[in-house]
Each structure stands twice: as structure tokens, then as C-alpha cells.
Length: 269
Ligand code: NAD
Image (cartoon, rainbow, N blue to C red; front, top):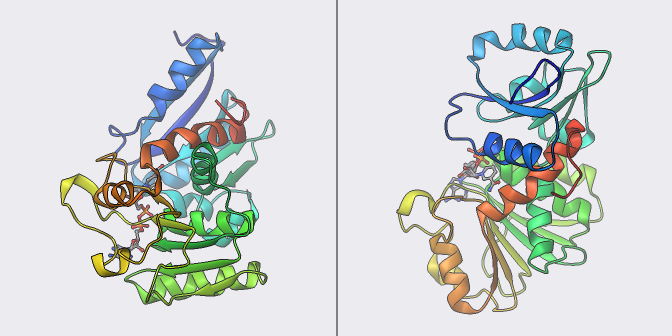
């Protein structure tokens, strides 16, 4: 029940019907007896400036989860960005301070690392390969560097995206050895697919089979794709004896960091 006293959070994107956050957050608020609710908002891009102005004055909203296609547009319109949101040029969550200031962060990487930990994988001291340097791949790569990987190999079909991310990460994390050389996966501790490849039952793999055949059984293999839950890459990894991490596991592990940043949940739900 939404009452006059209910404090709000929102998720804003376009389209919005597919998002799972309102189900998850509202179920948690109800189970905890909290007078809080999450609204889904399908926002047109030409209304962004007016929406940001409204957010500043909207006194019973605590924050907003931001999804496609507005992650970059919000980042350039709010008052303060976390260092990682600044480097990524994107936000996926905004907190509204009591005085109306809007502060942004990007916590996709926290969801990824939370799910990895739940699967017994710690990134510190490890060698990681991330396929995809887009929104989620960049966030994962940043967080892996923060967590202390020693080597990070990145790949993307877009040389511009790849180059920009490598330049930004190399200056932020001088202790990490970066590479784009993907001739073998023999020394890989973590392989992450951060592209949409494998989505929707196409059967596609994000890397050639011959290269995947060099992956050791000791590697942890993660996919960001949420449907199907077991992607072709994860099915291959399972058959090889690798530990695996699914897209839905990452999404679930991200709810705590999103809610915590807005001040409405603990870090772990
Ligand atoms: P994006 O378009 O920003 O990035 C995708 C990147 O993959 C692009 O840079 C593209 O050039 C690259 N790419 C595509 N095919 C490739 C290939 N064969 N090899 C190398 N690079 C390739 O998209 P995004 O926002 O980063 O989302 C990527 C996927 O992650 C989507 O399927 C999205 O649904 C999913 N996602 C999952 C979660 C989760 O919690 N599990 C969170 C966010 C996004």
C-alpha cells in the first residue's frame, strides 16, 4: 500500500516493462514492513532535463535506479559522481540528498563481484579476461581492477570502445597489467562474458571454440546474459568442470548495492 507517508524510490529507463527491480524491491520492503515503494518510470529522452529538475524538488523520493538508455545522459546532468561513475561516464543509481543534490554511482561491478564471492571466487591476485567493453563490461573491468586483479585482458569488436576503456583504466590502475592479446586462455582464472552474445537461445559463443578449448578447468566463468540463465558459454564451462556464475545471480547480488546507495536497504539483502 502506498500512503501519504510512503517514501519512494524509482527505476527510470525506456522501455521499462521488462525490469525486475520493482518486484524485488517492493517484495523486500513489504517483507521488512518498510513504508517504502519503488515506482517504474518510462521516461522519454526529451524529458530528462525536466525530470532532473523535478527530482531535485521531489522531497519524498530517496533515489532512482537508472537503466537503458539513460545511464550516460543522467551522468552529465547531476551534481556529483563517484570516481568510478566519472571514469565510466555513466550512472546506474542516483541518491537524492535532503537538500535536493543528486549524487550518482555505478554498481554493476559490485553485483558482479558479489555474485563471484557467493560462488567462492575472489578476484585479488588473479588473471581475468573480460569480453565486451560496453556499459556492463567497463563496470566489471573497473571493479576487478579495484579488487586487485594482477592481469586484465579486454576484448571488444569496437576498437574505439576498447581503446578508450584501456586508456582510462591504465591511468587509474597503474599496478594492473592490461592486454588485448587473446591467443590462449591457458592462464585465465576468471573469464567473463559482458556482451549480449548467447542471449535469447541463439546458441552463440562469445569466443571461438578453439580458444575456449584452452581454458583450464580451474577457471571461474561468468556471464552477464540473464536469459537463458545457462548460456552456451556457461554450458561449455560446466561441462569442462569450471565454476560458473549466471547473469541472474549478478542481478540479484546488485539489489543490495543499489538499495544501499539510495539509503533504503542494507548492502546485502
Ligand atoms: P553495451 O551495448 O553497452 O555493450 C556490449 C559490448 O559488447 C559492446 O561494446 C559491443 O561492441 C561488444 N560486443 C558485442 N559482440 C561482441 C563480440 N563478439 N566480441 C567482443 N565484444 C562484443 O551493452 P551492456 O549494457 O554492456 O549490456 C551487455 C549485456 O549485459 C546485455 O545482454 C545486458 O542485458 C546484460 N546486463 C546484465 C546485467 C546483469 O545484472 N546480469 C546488468 C547489466 C547488463
